[in-house]
Image 1 (cartoon, rainbow, N blue to C red):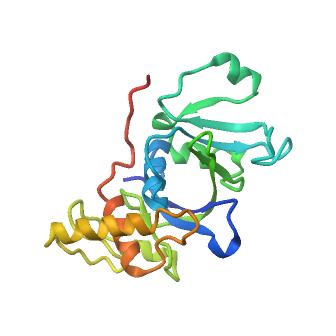
Image 2: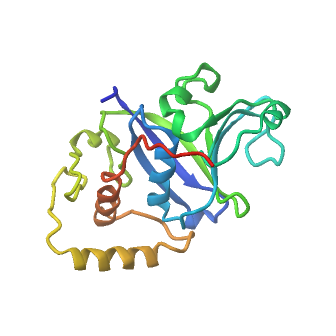
Length: 226
């Protein structure tokens, strides 16, 4: 297991403040960006199957979402083909999400130790834009974990992982005693969270459900390119 996790605050931008959607994630430093993408899919309950990218805008050139930013980093969906001419034209180096880790980006001197925000764009066309900010470091885990709603994010130290069991903020593990009831609950939650203007995972119960899903995920997945 790597050293301390990154504590990231991820917000879906462009919505009215009273309907802001955000989640705080404890992320392994050696997790790759494809893993972070899948974690954010779970956190925001986005419909799967669309392209994504992560970018870090050059603050000396343009702001994110300004229409024509220059990017210091451009991390793409592994299914997107490489276009060297386009990479050169936009003065940016393309990285592939399943081959580039969070630590490689956030520790890079160009990103100023994580001081520059990262943009996560999902569904290129609908453009669901998310702003990712590094809040600090928290104790290491080998899985993504939500620490939203916790007064002290360092309580992530008390989160114990179970590949099959329930994980909540206090580290308790509950076995899947009733699969049918759990599936019904998941379907109900998915229906309730389908509206992008609803605030996600504010209750202890919903945070626990999210962590149960996150703990079953590989933080370093690989994907074959097309």
